[in-house]
Amino acid sequence: MMPSWAILPSLWLAAGGIGCREGIAVGKGFYLPGCCRFGVLFREEAFRKFKRDLEGRPDVTHVWIVTDSEEAFAEMRSSLPARLVTSMLYRDYLRNFRINTRQNV
Image (tube, rainbow, N blue to C red; front, side, top):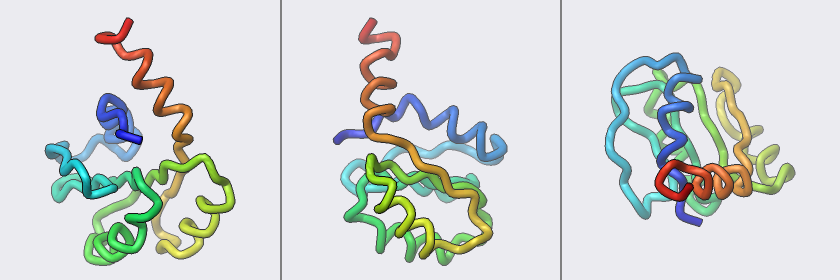
């Protein structure tokens, strides 16, 4: 699923609204901008790389994992540092968010 980039400002605010929001590297499977305190894992298969990149980012405070599987979320969450505020975003929620954006109404 191609993620809805329109939700990123809301996630940025939820993480404290600190720093900038950089452009998206499509195809990477996650969003971890170098100048703010949050990251989003869009594709579960990119988790290892996402986790590795997070290890070098002690400034990151919030992480969102996009999945419809509570089991997959729990497993990934348990292997991330406890200092992170980690939340689940359902793929179905993002689909709905994308469908109901202004350009599609």
